[in-house]
Image (cartoon, rainbow, N blue to C red):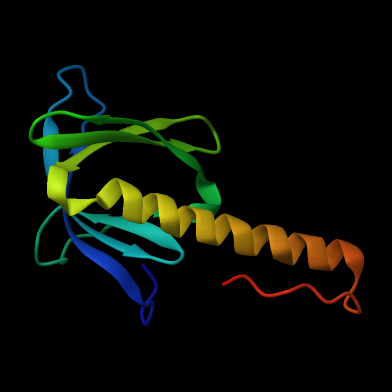
Length: 125
């Protein structure tokens, strides 16, 4: 996470481990316009794992059970990272909206660079 980035959402998510037993591990997460950062401890003292939106393809497989919402982040290299959050926290929606905004801005920038600097495009709201 870059210093000075505006925080959209901060709180606890659970990430399923990659090992054979696939335990759910609590992570302190910070969502910004550029990435989702995962800290192993609540004090943010340990090094975080940062999932930059440029390397995320989509948020997928949303399933709701009584207590949790389960969802998967799919990276551009097709790696799947499983998460769950409490039903009322709406982490999946916040991540999806931030990712869509990031992808839309990237698409507009790409379009502008292909069309040249003289073309005017209405800004995204």
